[in-house]
Image (cartoon, rainbow, N blue to C red; front, side, top):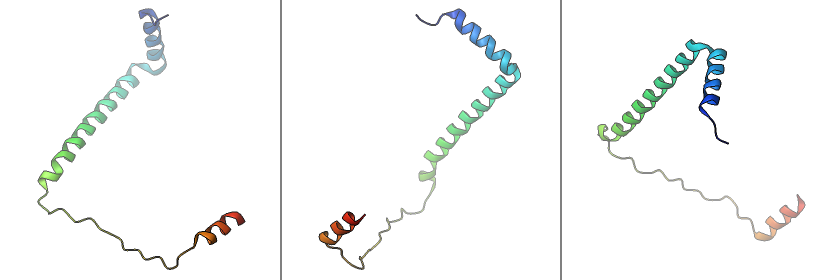
Length: 82
C-alpha cells in the first residue's frame, strides 16, 4: 500500500489551511536564505587558507610531570573502598 496522489493532495490542502499560504512562503524564503548563507560560508572557508599569508603555527605541547605516583595496590584499595 503506497501513498497515492490523492493522499498527498489532501495532506497539502490541510497544511495550506492550517498554516496559510503566507507562512509557508515565508518559511521557504527563510530556508533559501539559510542555504545561501551556508554556501557563502563554505566558499569563504575554502578561500581563507589561501588568502592568509601568515606562516602555519607550530602545534603547542604541554609538558606534564605528575606530582606523585600511585602504585597498583593503592589504586585497587581505593576502588574497593568505594
